[in-house]
Image (spheres, rainbow, N blue to C red):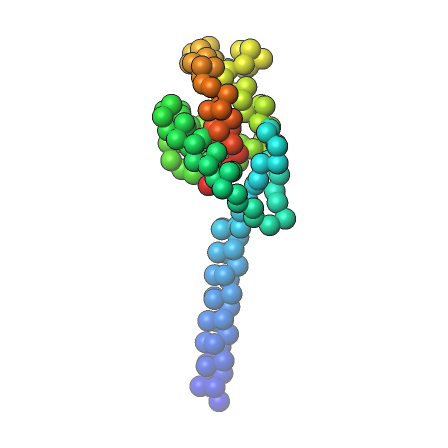
Length: 143
């Protein structure tokens, strides 16, 4: 009789450990919802993931602009770059126009940013509108 109870307790304990492992794995690794550009300046979570070739081309172009301009020296995306100023989920915090202002160091940010950062952002005003738009799309969808 003791052996039978020992087996039941061992099976129950194993199942309990397995279920707790699954619960903790789900808690620690939540499923991320994709975002899609609905119009320049906004990002919204879709009912289902949508990927178009056009969006992908903009995202890839924006990623290249991000790398070419050395943005990773001050910022990080998905753990790559300077972790001090991460840009992950930036689209959930700022609109496309606000992101544009932060990239180019708009006059409205002069009081919010230290002068050396504000001055360094002024060089991004020379980016073409297409490059700037692609960079914003990439920041809104950094997959």
